[in-house]
View 1 (spheres, rainbow, N blue to C red):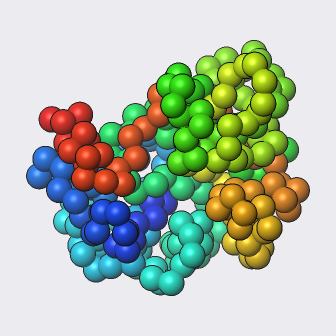
View 2 (spheres, rainbow, N blue to C red):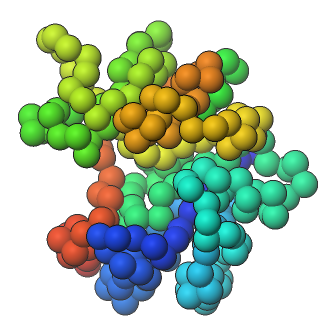
Length: 245
């Protein structure tokens, strides 16, 4: 594999305005995410942004940024535009790291490549077993329904995603999982995905990964031990500052 990390970042956040530039102990949040993506040692790291201020913040620390359209409906569309501007078919795996996870463990980022060792997998992502009972019924926590095909993978258990939902699924006794929104796309899978229209289940659940499943694409899931803090509110921001002190 010849992977590249692209971090989509946009200024239009309703709950936390100008979120990528939010100060965390002297540096913008997007810079913390960029540094941790570099530390994963997967490969080159770019920030795909829609604002000159984000672009400048990354350039200032010696990083690479690409300006993209502000009209993209999703991060997947944004990273695809950036990919097309960056290379000439050199990269065969594109890792999408969200721009609001400033405390993420670099090893969690590199774990997303594990499911792609299976040539049948089109898209890879991550999940963690839910330990907090409240998360099980929280619609903000996306739950993947997983089929474990190989329990003996050396470092991570790998599963195949059957479905993703905001509901408490699957029903009955057993573990439930918290989806972590980091993706690794094979290049052909990303090209196919962004060309597809939004699917009925995607619109109903408001989860774009369902578009891939409805189109018959295979999503592999690596099970990790921790859930990275996503920063969406002032409370989350203060928690990130304390964690990174």
